[in-house]
Length: 322
Image 1 (spheres, one colour):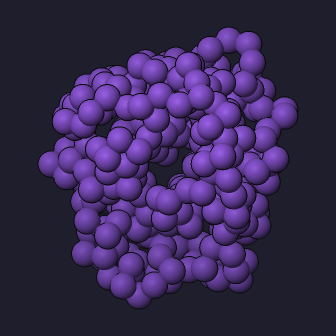
Image 2 (image 1 turned 30 degrees about the vertical axis):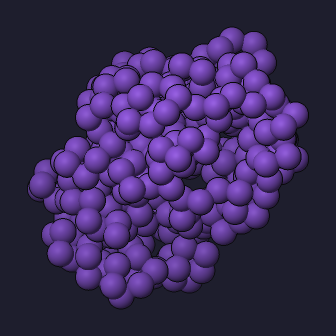
């Protein structure tokens, strides 16, 4: 098959190029730069320069590739988040999830592309009420913290547009692993080592994790399996911050995290950060396992934190993302 990966040098896209090539597919990957194009070529794909916010650029790239499958993995994330100014941090990515998604879907329709797979997210986007673990049938948060309102709206938009086009939206959990903020040398992991990530309040916010290589494997599965719809791509064990954060600190040889009241943390990480740490909800992967024929290599974050944080855990060409 001809596979088109929009965002072929990103966190997930960089892993997809060698996976699809190894499976015998003809792969076109996009990058914003000539250097990125060269990395895609080195992994066995055909690299093209594309600006995901420029509809004409998107159309040219997609029509030239004439793909059977289009995979949308374009973001503009650096790994550093300002929780008090979350929407500002995600401003460009929000454009890519709205105007960029529209451009890709329009080009795919014109090219006669038969299958579309689009990246989404699950975690703080879940409604912060009711059951501790949400399925794809549960609503997104109807009352998001204002600092993240635009970002949630962009995620919801990309999902609706994907479903309207008959595609699959993969809601990835919180990434960890090589090259990620929560990975060896990453900003968040180093903050945990320096004891700078506290348990806020009772630490009852539930998080669902996804190793970066498991996200790539799920995307490969979605390229050929599963009906149109939304799929949570997370591990088997949603967990409260009070459970996973101390274990992460123990695994990396750090002191146990401190505990701070919510009102103190609010001054540093804002209402959004406090909500995520105290009232967030996890996500179920049952649908993805049943309908995509996918299961996470790292079944739980416990195993992943022990053996999947470092470079040696990557079993694809993660150097593409550098």
